[in-house]
Structures are given as structure tokens and as C-alpha cells.
Amino acid sequence: MEFVDYTIGELMNSLKTGKTPKTSNSEYFDGDIVWMTPSDFKGQKYAVTSERTITAVALEKNEAQLYETNTVLISTIGDIGKVAIVKKPVSANQQITGVKINENILLPELFYYWLILNKKILENKANRAIISQLNNKLLRRISLKFPKELKDQQNFILYLNKTQELIDLRITSIKKLDDYIKSLFFESFGDPIHDNKGLGKKTLSFYGKWRTGSTPPKNSSLYYSGDIPWLTSGELNETYTYTSKNHITQSALSETSVKKVEANSLLIGMYDTAALKISIIKVDASCNQAIAFSKLDEEKCHPLFIYYNLLYSRDYYLNKRKGARQKNFKLSMIESLEILDAKPLHQKDFANKVERILTLITKYQIHLDHLKILFQSTLQKAFTDDTEIDENLFFEDILPNLNLNDLKEKRRLNILIDWMNKKNNRFTTFEKYDEAYKIILDLLNDGTLEQEFIQNGIILKIKQ
Image (cartoon, rainbow, N blue to C red):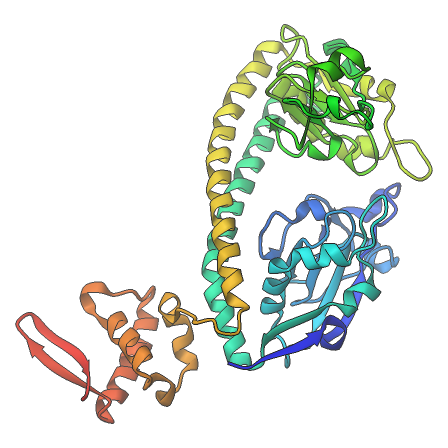
């Protein structure tokens, strides 16, 4: 199998970066056009859904642009190298760059898989500033190596798709459960912004005392060699948080302005891209100054109710941030965020239901993590010159693309015979089995295969 080398600049037909419509103009948002941001990249292969959508008006006013089918989207600011393929035209924000590849040289799916494997290369090519950025000039210079023949590329794609399909199914299952929690909240309490159920509202300050964290002096290693989790706002990515990348010592708590954050406290990000990221910490911990936290009064509220109330209000409050360059929240703004005044008993009932759903989501997430490890292992093999692809895994998919001469390789004949074994039929549809049966007849007629009568019926054999 021959491999070739190209730069992305040599392969691309087009390359363009997304836009964010003016958030102050409501006619640009909540339409039916998918508008991708890095947070929408969950590991799924295709860009088909997003948390926020835009309208056709945003496109007409040149406030956004569409990426056509088979464009590969790449996150190029912040978390570099998240990728997805456009299945039907979508839009994206300025953190996303879309690359349309010349499909006569490289199939978009294989380009997508190459980017997943080589995320580190993209990260290393990025400019290192306050926020990492991979600009279009740097992106064009990146070179990649892949099989020259499109047929070989397609075989690699089929090989990788099997694991990717399982990943996509698991992501879809998790998304459906998240959507179910949202429907439970709105059914029980109504819209957290418009209060259409007339519950009334109270500010976050009513439910608990709010404080901010701090950072121990960086020049003292004695403060950073402990076992107390010390969170930054970028780590508030899940409903529950159990640990952190960095840890501090008891000395840091007693000798500096760092504060203890009690287990089951609610944490809220305050600055820039992490503003209003939220999580409930499940262990005693600490945090930096970019996080506001509170051990909420459980006689007045349930942390999960407050969490989801804020989650479903996030977009509304993000538009109220202050600041010219980085739009941040002050502690007083966090304290003034409004929460529906639902009865504590109703909050607890909602939280009990959600806990059961979150347990299932956790199981699905563990399975998803295992699939991603398997997928990375498969990717490593796929872009190696001497790779032997196990066609047995996806034989029914490549069969229509193989002519009789292709099938006369002994390895493929053995796979075909195995797949046609009626006691172990592996075809997923009758139509695919019927296609294989017609090929078997041709191979019997030209003498490549022969039938042998045995006690329990007839088997196929390669003619000696």
C-alpha cells in the first residue's frame, strides 16, 4: 500500500473561520440553523446538533456563514483540535475553522480521523498566548501522510467507523438523558427566566453565603505538594466534580488567603469563557479567584435544583456580563442571579429523579471512555504503512466494491465463505446476504469455489 504526503494547504479547496452574530440582537438566535461552538464537540463524528441555533436572518446580514456538506470543522482557539464533519450545512463561531478537502485526493472522513489521531500536532503548532490559537496560516502548513489510493482510504474508513458508530450511539444516549432532565425541570418549574408558572424568584444570596477562592503564592512549592483539590474555573465541566488537576497543602489553607470549599458546595465560574460554568464539588476542596462558591442552605434549596436553574438560565445571564476585553462577573453579580422560588419539597423530588438519571449517565460515560481508548488504539494502527486491515470486521460493507479478481485472493475467499456459513450468518440485512449469494454463484460457475456434501448439508470450499 502506497502512502503519500501533503500539507493541508495543498489538499484544501477552501478554508474559512466562523463568526458570532451580535448577541444583543435577538433576531439572530433561536432559529433552525445549527451553530457550533467547541462545547458542542462531544466526540461525535457529525456536526448535526448544537446548544444554540441561529436564524436565516443572521446569514442574510452576514453575521454568520454556512459550511457545506463534507467540510471538516476544527476548533482552533482554546481547546485545539476538536473535530466534526458537516453532514448538512451548519454554521459555527469564531473558534471553529472549516476545511473543505479535495475529495479526489483525500476522503473527508479519513482527514477527520487523521486529525483525531494527531490532535497533539495541532496543539503544538498553535500560537502560545493567554489562549492557544491555531491560525489559518499555521493550519495550512501542517502536513499529513495517508494511503494514496481512494479504495485503500475507504477500507481504513470502514475499519474505523465500527468503533466510531458505537461512540456516536453512546453520545446520543447521554444527550437524550440530558434532554430528559431538561424536560423534567421545565415541566415541574417552568422557564427559569420568564417564570411562566408564577413561582416568584429569589436571588442566589438568599440560598447561601458566597465567596471567591484565591491562588497560593506560586514561588512556594510547600503549598502545592498536598492532597487538597484546588480547582480552576476551566475544570467545572460536569454536574459533579470529585478531583482537580492541581492540589495544595493544609499549609496553603492556613497560611494564605485560600479558603476551604466544603463538599456539596456549588461552584460558579466568573471570568471570560468559563463564566457561569457550574459544578457541585463532592469532596472538601479549594479553588482559585475565578470561582465563586457557596455551601447552600439545604433547608431552603437542593443544590441540584439550583444547578439546573442556573444551567438553563446561562445564556440569558451571559449577555449581562461587564468588561471591554474579557466579559466577567463580579461576586455581587453572582449573588444577584435570580432563582425560581420553588418549594424545597418539590426541589428534592426533582433532585431524586435527576440523581437516578445521573447514575445512568455515569455508567454510559464510563463505557464511552472505554470506547474512546479502543478507538485511539485502532487509529494508531490505521496510519501505519505496514498496517494489515482486518477486513473480516466490515466485510459486508466493502463487498459491493470488490470485483471477482479482488475476491479471488485466498484471504478474502476464506472470509466470504465464513460469512456465508448459514449456521453463523453475519450479514445484517437480507439484501446484503443476497448480494453475496450472487457473487458465490459467479465464483462457483468459474470454478474458483466448489461445493462439498457433508452429513448436515453442503459447505463451500476453495477449489484445489
